[in-house]
Image 1 (tube, rainbow, N blue to C red):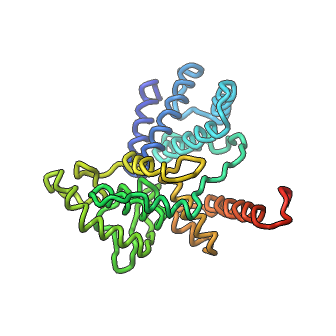
Image 2 (cartoon, one colour):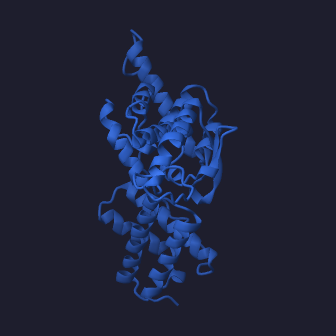
Image 3 (cartoon, rainbow, N blue to C red):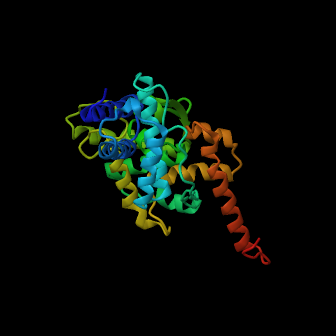
Length: 309
């Protein structure tokens, strides 16, 4: 059924679905595209006449064996399997496949790395780093306060529109992975920073676009929608103010949000809902972070603690 060109047409269709219907992040879209093209090239070299409808688990395992020979890390291989599972699931829904040939294929095990988390005092230093009263500094304060207050992803933040904010509840409706919506909350500090931005900065930035207001909450210096990359540059701008051993990212604030909530006694399922995790097991990684931080604090503070405690 499929020719070589058909293979790539289905990949293109899946990528369009991933980007527009499932609203996946651009990093995910680009990663899945690379992984699927790599698998398609593997088929062309080894099974040139084979269409998508004929792919079996053994072929997926042969692809994994090639990845092992290329000395790819277990994490990279795991991501490629995830891409194949998502793609074959899409093909199954479109009637191309009757089963998912990657579903039963297991990824190599790897040690799960704990998320990098900022200490609360480092978060405070970061949130107060934008000291200027120019529109971009005012905007940056609102961005940082809202990221930490809500735990939202950077793509969720840049997709916010003015209408998404419920000021009576200090709540925001965000659209996350898989086009799923949820409500996140923000406190007084973020509220004050947002109001300051809306009153003093956004109108000035909007003028740069000729007052063509499309409703996006956060604008760039040209008065148009802020991008994910621009938010990462905001973190880069103020990172030198910190003494951390790692480079903080917008996701660092999300990790810090979750960990600090659990440190303060928040319920795990509440944190799961606020983060928008589909599975509780994804959220449980933050309990490990909290436990490690507790052990580290004990080792430093207790006069008779040892490294084996």
